[in-house]
Structure formats: C-alpha cells, structure tokens
Length: 555
Image 1 (cartoon, rainbow, N blue to C red):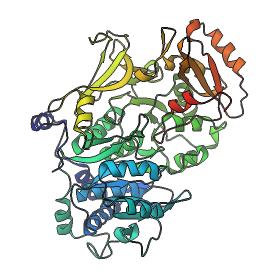
Image 2 (image 1 turned 45 degrees about the vertical axis):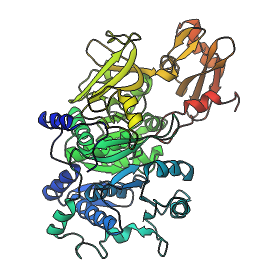
Image 3 (image 1 turned 60 degrees about the vertical axis):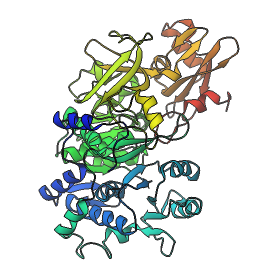
Image 4 (image 1 turned 180 degrees about the horizontal axis):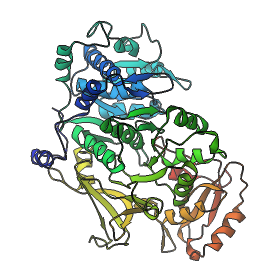
C-alpha cells in the first residue's frame, strides 16, 4: 500500500464520509465507459484514433506486460511522452498495474532526468523511441549504465530490438505473449485478476514533477481520489458533458493538460490531443475535430491570437477555453474571447494543488476577463493572510494559503519538505502557495503575483503584474514581463521585458510614452526596457524570470 505522506486514516475516512472521495477510481471509470459506449471514439492524436473499448483493452495489455517484465506494485516509472494517445494509455496501464507514474517534460534531457532518477529511485521509463531529433532509446542506454535502479525502458513508435532492457510498446499493445490472443476481447477473468493490482482510492497513484523553477525538481504525491475529485469537480463547474470534444493543446504532463484529461474522463467526453503547438496546426485540429472545450496555457493561447485572419477556420463548435498554469492578462483574455468566440474561464493551481480555484461560464465578464481565477471547488478552501498573520479583509493583498480534499499529499520521499510546506503532518494543514492575492466581496480570488517576485525599489513595493497588465494594453505588445534587478542605490530596479506582436514595430520610446498616459506613480515606472522576440520559458510553460533578470541589456 502506498500511503500518502501527510494523510491520516481519520482524514481519509472524513473525505469518504463527506462524499468528496469515492470508491470509484479512474480505472473503474474507464471500464464503465468501455462497457457503456464501447464503440464511441474516446481519444485521438495526429496518427491514432481509439474507441473506449480499445483504450480499455490496450491499457490492460500494456499494464500486464509491465508486470511481466519484472516491475512490482508500488515501483515508480518515469513517463516522458508527447501528446500521443500512448500517453493516455500509459496512465491507465500504470494505474492498473499498481505502478506509480511520474510525468516529466518531453523536452528534458539527461541533465534534468538524472536528478529525478536519482531522487525517485525510478525503475523504468516510458518514452518515444525518437522524437524531434532526439534518440530517447540511446539516452536511456547511457543512463542505464549510471543508475542500477533504472534497468527497463518501454519505447513508443519505433524499433529498439536487441537492446538490453529495452522493450517495444507495440509488442505490449498487441498482447504478444501476454493476455488474450484476441486484443479486442481480453479474458474477463484475467482483467479482474489484473485490475486487483490497481490502486485503492486513498493510495498515491501518480507523481507530478516540478519544472525546477526554484532549483531541483520536486516530486509531489497525488492520491487517486484527490486527483479524481479535481476532475469531477471541474466537469461540474464548467458543465462539460459527454457531447463535448475536449482539446488538449498544452503538454499533457502539466497541470492544464492533466485537467483536460481528467475532465474528459469524468464527463465521458472525447479527447483530441494536440501534438503540435503551432497556431495554424492547432486551428486546423480544432476546426476538423469540432473541438468544443480547450484546456491550455496562456502562452499557447497567445499564439492563436497572432493569426491575423481567424475566419479561415470554422470555430463554431468552440464554446469554452480554460487557461491555467500561469496568469493570463486581462487584455489577452478579452481579445481571445472576442476573436475566438468562446468564453475564457481562467483557473489557478499549482503542482501541489492541481486546481484550487476555477471561474464559471456563468461568471460575468468583469470576473472572468477582469483578472479573477474564480472560487474553490467543493472540498477546497482558500484563505489570505496579511502581514500580521491575520485573515485579510476583502480587497487586501496577502499570501494565499489553500487546503482540501483535492490537494497533493506531500513530497515523495521527503517528510521534512512536506512538513515545511503544509506546516504539519497528520492533520489537514494549510499549504503556503507563495502567491500574493486578494478576494473581492463575493469571495472571487485575484492573484497579483508571487511573494518572491515583488520588487522593492527604494523602499516602495512594486507588484510586477500591475505593470504587466498596463503594458499588455498597448496594441503592439504581445507579451510583457516585469522583473527586479539589483541596483546599488535603490536596492532593486525594475526591468520591463516586452515582446512585440508579429509584424508590429515597437521601440522603447513607444512603451515609455504609453505608460506616461496611464498616470502611474513615478516609482513604478520601469528603469530598463528589454525588447525580445520571445520570452524564455521553463518546460511547464511558465516564464523564466531568473533568466530575464540576469540578462545583459542588448542580448
């Protein structure tokens, strides 16, 4: 049994008694859908299309094969896959086999992977054979020589025959040597026996891995029921149904991508996976597949807005766009809703709480498009503490803390870090998010920045998001980020990093003149301007502010 680090039996019993956690798991939900709508399309990418029955049967065969190559219940498997249907299949296969899946960005290479392999004790990896010019099989062989624990690799969409410890996904998927000879009708007794290895609702079943923006990646535990509660709650809040087509246009391993998967499973809706995040290819997919709901991140949404003539695509089926992972500016949210014809429903979450608040399609525009990230879902709580540690009043900025039944259960293998983050073990502690936020009189949450990003210039506090929102109102500005840089006399100075829209000219004088019209206090005015073609980003899509703060002007 993989018991959550900070949860007690009484906490689990209370969540179950309140109906927040249920006996249903993601595997049991998949099996129910495979019976109810066996021949209905469940998931697709650019190359493959699977029905619910095929998703069920192939994940069964892969799960059994993973055990037959020697992996034992409770062991950890790294998953480094693009947005392919095999990514979804791996999730169900690991859960059915009782194997912990730790999901890492497909753009990571040995330097990043080795830190996770070392800290997690990973026993295997599932990856593409080759992708975007990288040979993942060769990379695995090099790591296999360094780490005795990492001895097995399963490789998707490519041949790896004759290699030590390497297995081909296609052999697992066809059930060659395992399971029923008929891949469409696995033996019911075999399925029942194999699914007995699946996780219980209260067990840790998935590990999310941070992108390392504050140092070494952290491994956050997710109990099955906590993850599943988030998916069910989001489906209810956004009114997603089995008639929807859910488009995931961001990495499936990140928070926004995972929420797209979970909400589709909860609603019994079809998933369309976008492997490419190029604007025209995404628009082609949205139009062709009649996507009605998109889960994405602001960076990728902005790429759609760079397309000058959106009327070339039929976007009439699109009704909702959920943005997460990073904040979306008010200007971008308004433009996206106007030009794409779908309601923008921003959310907030973190690695430790995949989603702690969510706006609703029924929220008025001044909430959805005015900087709010919504209210908590059932089973969650948020609070804001002022400088004195007392609860903040409406409109007062303070540090955001969260708790509830859909948060993570701690850091894998690190009790001390878990206790430091939640303030306690063995009871329901409050997680300090590091976000600065306020709530209005209706308890809608507004995040104004990160505690560590606040700039103290000559004794004055400057919230970067305030300046970023103003800069984004300039018609030629695509993206804007404000960072603090060391200053001998002021302590910190402000640097505005601006990316112009495609085809637009922009000078520092243009930006300065625009800000003068906004009548902001003189101490808030940026000391430096940096014009860029694009912003540096971490694998999860967040802006790499450290990179921007350390850059020399003109580079």
